[in-house]
Figure 1 (spheres, one colour):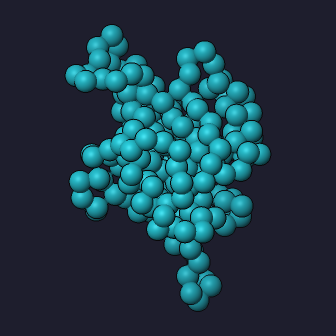
Figure 2 (cartoon, rainbow, N blue to C red):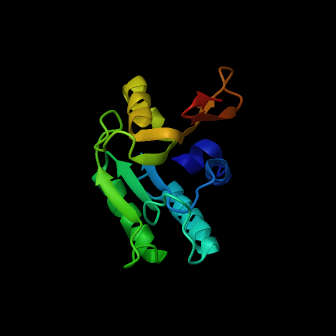
Length: 173
């Protein structure tokens, strides 16, 4: 669907999304409507790269190794993501990826437990977008980043616009 809607540009947009997110060592990230793992894999690789650059050092207050939780309402999409993760060597004994089935409007996580949140092209499938946004802000702690990526057709039907909502909890930009 994303290939069709974006003429393949969604891959570049997802790369930009992750660059803007700027994942760091020890970061705990939630990727909502991310069943296939496209964004999650990029984020996990960036986290691991940041952790590797630290060597044996850990930043002050470091909780643990970083992780990415892939959250999707569709069990089949999550199964596809797990298959892709295994094919790319990301499902190993190092951990770092969790797969959780659920609704974006009712996230199954404690308040403030995530450092960042993304939803890429999944918001179009959410019935109550305001509830999903409230949940995103609830599970992210102060200083976290929330990013939504989507695209919409222009009214005249001639083209499409890439939209990214970036919110730094502590101020929306």
